[in-house]
Length: 311
Ligand code: CUA
Image 1 (spheres, protein in one colour):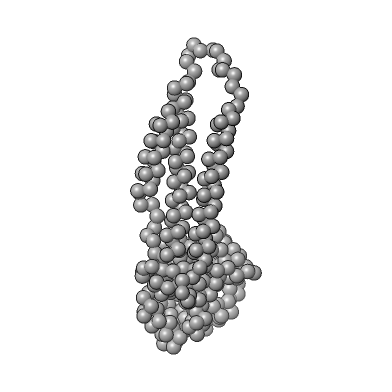
Image 2 (cartoon, rainbow, N blue to C red):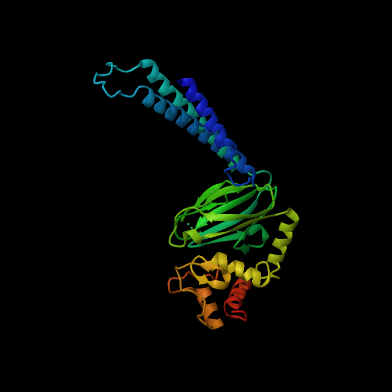
């Protein structure tokens, strides 16, 4: 019976392991996180398969026959079994705890000199500030590849949580305290950046992109931002990006493909540019002020995007 159970457990664990469930690995930290994940999930699947197959086997083999009305044998405990089912879980939980602690400590350490990004979370948008690059602000998270970035997270209103599945690392942004997280991207590309803490009606729309660039491209991006030559990345495309990540969580706008319902829809409202600018800067009527959140260029680009030709 036990050998059948072990075979079933081994096969189930192997099947689970060889199916490609997880998103691609795009950071050094993900490797440790995946290790902890697979050790923990592997143990769970193995134990579950053993218990389930023994239960099913026993249920079939020792079931009551139709004409059997006798009592079972009187059994009172089994010291050997008690020791086994206390000792085995203790060992497993201890292994998981030590492994997790080692990985957490490792993932908290930046490699070399990290760049710093201040992350501000608020209902329902992310803002990234680069203090080493003239406090350049962005609504997408730009990172150089193969170099550690230290994110310093804060929240303006309620709890939020920073997560890029491909990077693995996850951290809460908590009002009143500062939390940190280290990310060392290992491949260039664009990844989804999500809020994973239910933070209000716009939570599911509080998402933007993490964009990993080569060090040279990153330096060029930072320089262009600092020189203020472009609104964000420049032009209509970026005004749309700013709109999607900053405003889309709360407003419907067909051309940007956003569907937020916290604020009024912005199609067919015919607003004057001065009013739109005033509203973005000062907020009001339930909308936060964005004067200090967006650069002058971004505000200008948004106003044009919302009121200019092509509207
Ligand atoms: Cu912010 Cu969910």
